[in-house]
Image (cartoon, rainbow, N blue to C red; front, side, top):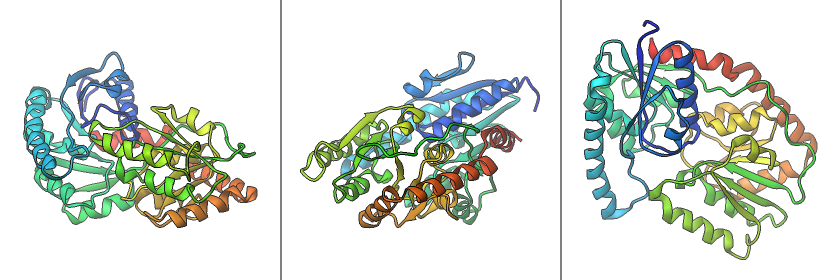
Length: 361
């Protein structure tokens, strides 16, 4: 590719979570290398954080949201129309000579299939494929995928089984950074940095902390419009007598500001994460992390870099929280191992150029 070439990014959401943070870093990297950057994404926080030189093509949200039953069927039909409209919006850019198309999310993949970019599309895989709807989307979109760049080995496995060309390139975070933690807050605080959507496991965390009367919980993250019912359920659960006054919803929060408030960081996802950036961010600051034992979380926290528990098990999660809170030496050892893991494998100054190279070449 030449320095004058264009990189077109496709994203399904206008919200900003870990996958979109990686996307913003990639846009910065592309512009540093002299590429023109274009992004197709919905309006929202992501578009608001784009560099001034990046061209924004506005599309609709590309997802099913939290609808259930008949409403979910209607949402699926509408989604098909949104994919078609998004493909029309990006087609001229995607097919232009010198354009490389990078898809940042599973539900934006069909846009690439329908737009038919000249070189095909690179898919940056932030989702571990473990459901029927994911497999259906991948099967439909596969002809457009030139390469799938997975952020963890665990996520690469089902993609290879589906016949996709796959390479692995791990996520990274800034390094070196200040160490947090040390003396516990009074009372101790456990936190989760994740969108308020069901598979992230917030309910599991609340049920776990309900059995630990001296612990507070803070949940940092926004939500999708379709998850309003789930968010309401979380607020209702937090108001029950065994949790009342001990749960705070922080909304959209800067990761560093949130992490400074916490003693232990939780990743309770009930479905496998590909490579959760929030886990790496917490590890980089030396905070002890408790995560569910699957997907990229297992790879990040194995061999003493964190504590792993079975998905969807509030009893096991409560035991792990109690153990970490009660043992200052263990918190220190976990933090030291985690920081070494980040320094040796996940320094963004090394991982980002490699990731960008994998996507555009």
